[in-house]
Length: 337
Image (cartoon, rainbow, N blue to C red; front, side, top):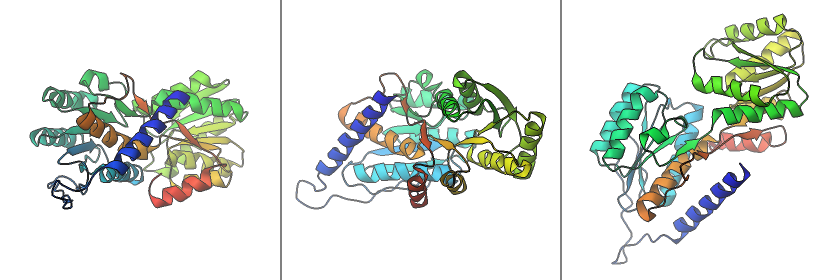
C-alpha cells in the first residue's frame, strides 16, 4: 500500500508539471479557444490545453454530498488539463447509465470513466465501448469486473481491504467484540467491509443489518436491540456515515461506552470525530475517484500511457481520526473531501 501511494503521488506530480508546461496559444500566437460544449447530457469544462479531447464520466451519482466531491475532482482535473468533461449522473438508475454509455459511444468519446453498481447491466455496454476503440476506466464500484470489460484499470477502494484496515484500528483501540452494522440487506460492498473486518480483528464480530439510513430512528432502535442482547459488545463499525452516527446515538441512549468507527464522511461525522466521540472513519478519498480517471484518460490519449499494470489504483483506505479531523473538516466544507 505504501508503494502504491508513492506511485500516486509521483503521478500527480507529473500531471501538475505537464499542466504547468502546457501551451495555451495557437501557431499564430492567439489565445486558444477556451469554449467547450458538452451538449444536453452534461456540463462542460473550458478547454485550454487538451485540444478537442472529450471525456465522459458516467456514474450512479445522486449528486449528494459524496458524489458532489467526485464531480469536483473530475472538473478540477479537466480544467487543469484543458479537456472537455461530460458529467452524466445516473441517479442510481442503471438503465439511465446504459443510455448514457450508448450516447457517449455515439458521440465518439475519447474516454469513458464509469462506476459499476450493477455489473449485469453495465458490463456489456462498456465492453461495446472498448470494442469501438474507446478507453474505459471504472471508478468507485467495479473492482471485481473491470478486467472482464477490458477497462484499462479501476480507480477506487477495495472494500475488503478497507474492512481489514478497520479491523486493525479496533485492535489498536482495545475493542474485543464489535458489531458491524449494515444499512442495506443485500449490498455486496457493505458485506465485504464487514468480511474484511472479520479477517483482521482479533476479537468477535457480529454482522447485522440494523435498518435503513432513510429511517434513522428505526436504525438507532435496531442497533440498540443488538447491543442490549449482547452486553459484552464494546465496539461498533457503521459501514456508512449515517449509520455510524446512529451507533453513537444508540450508545448514548443506553449510557454505554463504545469504540465507534465509520465509513465515508459527513460534516456531522467529522465533528463527532473531532470531539472524540467517534474514533475514526474510513476515507475512500472520493475526490481522487473523480480526479484520477480524467488524468489517466488524458495520458492514455496523448501519451499512450496505461496505469495500473493490470491491478486497480486504490484511493483508500485512508483514515480520519481526532488527530486530523479538523483539517479534513475544513476541506470538506470547501467541497474537496
